[in-house]
Structure formats: structure tokens, C-alpha cells
Image (cartoon, rainbow, N blue to C red; front, side, top):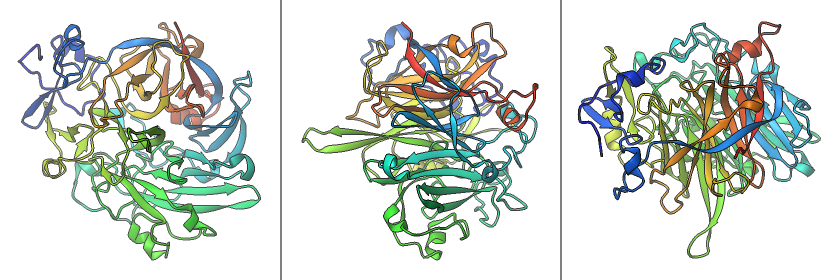
Length: 532
């Protein structure tokens, strides 16, 4: 039931100007405008006292805070964490500037991480060639970046063969001129000139007794949508999967995620058996399957499993038994949205289309109009033709559609199968969001969702954890402090939850500079523990 019929239209793209949004909205009224269509957003459209008992199964309750947990520091004094992996008794931690660290999980020390691999030279200087992004809170050029050491995956037989893979950006590999980051303000139909690119991402294999070898070099049009933690070992396929973002900018201006020839915007299976003995370190970087064919790479070495991705994180796998006692794999994949929604998909099959750029979660992608009074559907014809895209089961909104939540960017999701957190159901999906500016102190968001595995396209109810940050050093009085979330994963048995956090909004400045004015080592890993 909508409690008000009179709608106030707000600009969807003014993400940095919502500090006063509560005073501009009537109580219980949350709307968003898409062209001439004003949609009452589902997150808060049902009154709290009615949503639990309503017979309308299409309705969701507002996201509220319920389960109390605390963040317990496990690793501190490190740079921004882009990926967390548990191998045996150890963390393998990717940090954005290029250090791969190893730390014993239960060592009793927070500062005993050791360097396994130093790729800082290969990564280059963070922030290089990145323009000012005032709308994100970075008005100075070079103070924001999504490139770096992005991901790590270990061979299941890692303890014996020492084989692992890393996924990183080489910031020094770029063309002059580079593609215009603000391309979507100029044209959304101009194809990408692949002779111009911002950087090259590398997938490299390391193994005991062998020199490293490059398995893939991908041209990236822009500096963003690189996909933190997006390389993973698939127990289903017994090989690597790699999630590639749409190559960046905003609104996928070159329409790469829906282009079947482009690698960008796809979840890709890598057939390692067909790469035996091959090393592409000396070959040109690629952007398309046509480029791969020109390198005489065997057909099927790289293949698309899912298309229509914007900026994916790590795939989480869950093996289940269906009603006929057949084993199945459910995959969970978080995606960073554009200006309105964040979302996570659950799926059993492949060959699916998640809908981007036409669709952002369950909403059509939208542009803010020049007068900033409303927003227009960005690609209406594409959305119409793609009406049967595969929908996410977890959806939550930015301030423009849910000002009480204040979400910004999903940075990953994982499954919890433990029993140590009171009232948290085993089998729940745990997801993280970068930062909620509405909270004091400013902090990331941690959500839990009960999964209906029989209907993975039905949006499920999510709620928010109440976070105790005392052990992190952030309290209500810490108004100038921040802890934004950057990564999430669990222990091998899914019974313990770990998240990456960073304690400064100016994370590029703090990682590039040294001295007392620019503290180093503000990143860390925190375990989510019961606080009841």
C-alpha cells in the first residue's frame, strides 16, 4: 500500500547531494522518476507495521537493522584490501598498490602479514590519468582509482604444487590520447576505438619451480569497473572463472556488455588445459574474441558463461541436491549498480543475460536530465527488447530510492553456513556495500538475506546488521572517521565471515604518500562476530 499519492520527483544522478533528502520527502514516501513514469520504489512502499502481515506477496518490508554483530580486527596496518582468500590456515590478501600478502588467520597478531609477491612496479602509480570526480567526493585529479592488484585464486592442490593466479592492472600501459571518461555525456552509440585504451589488465600464473606466465592481457577502455576479487577457481568446472566489468566510464557508453564479441561485461570460463605451455606475455593485448582468434588461441579456451555485467565481484559457489537427488551448483554474483540500485544474482544455469546496460538490477538504466528535476530512461528501446533478462534476487537502493539506507556500491557477497552468530540463519547470503554516508561514524553496510533457492529471480527480503565498531577504533564520537568496506569472503567451511575495510576516504592519497600527514596502512581485515 502506498501511503501518499502525491509524488516528489528527485534527480537520480545527484548522488552526492542527498544530505537533506529526508527533509525533502514526506514520511513513508520514497519515489523515483524514470522518464514520464514515476515509480513507487518497492523498498519502502509498504508501511513497517503492515509489511509483515500483508497477503500481497509482491511487497517487501523496508530494510531495517536487526542482528547485532561486532567487527574484530584480524589484520591491520596494510593497504586497501581488494580480495580476501582463505587457503588452509592462511589469508592470501590482495592490496590495491600491488602487494600479495599471506597471514596466518589465528596467529594472535594483527600485524604479522608477510609479502608473497610484490607487483607494485607492474601496477604503477594509483590515480594516474584519473580525472577529477567531484560527484564522488574526489575534486582533485588522481585521487580516485579502481585499478591495482585486483584478485587472487589458488589451485585446489596449492599445498603441493604452489600454483596460483593473480589479476592486476598495469597502469603504465596506456595510449595517448586515452578514451574520454565522460564519453556517456557525449555519445552512447559511438563504438569503442580499441586503438585507444586506459590500461591493460593481466592474468598471470605462478607455480613452484616455474617462471610466471601470462594467460590473458585485456585492453580496458577506462580506469573503472575493473572487478575487485573477480577471478575465482570454479569447483563446478574445475578451472578458472573471470568476471570482467563493462570496461568503465558510466552507463556503458560503448555498449560493450551486450556485444558478444567483446570480453567486457562477461563472466568468462578459462580452459586451463588448453593453455598448457602457452605464455602471452609477449603478445598484443586483446579486447574481443576476434582478437583471441587472431592469436591462434584454440577455440573454447575462453568462453562466455554470462553476459550483461556492469562491475562484478567474486562468484560464490554452493552445491545442493535437488528433489531428484541430483547435485546442482548455485552461483551467487554481486554487481555494482549505476545510480539507483545494487544487486546480487543467484543462478544455476549459464547462457544468461543479466541485462546491463539497458537494465540496472530491476530498474531500467536512467540518465539525469540537464535541469536535474527528474531522470529519463537511458536506453528504452534496448530495455524493451531485453524485457526477459535474468533478474537478481537481492536488490537494494541508493539514497535516491531509499534514503534511509544510503547505499553506494556493492562490493561482494558470500554464503554463511555457521551457527556462531545469534539469529543469523545458516545458508544466508551476506553482502557488503562500500559506504553509508548517513551513518555516524561513516561506515560500510553489511546485509543478510535469506535465499529462496527454488526461485532465484524472486527478490528476497534483506536486513542490515547493527555493527559494533568499537574494536576498530570508530565510535559515535568519531565524526571525522570512516570505515568503508572493500571485500568479503568466508573461511573454507563458510562458518566465519571476513570483510576488508579502509579507514580513510582519501585512500589513493594515503597509499601513494608517506609521512605523518598521510598515514600509511589504514586497511585491514575484520571478522564478523556475534555481539549479543
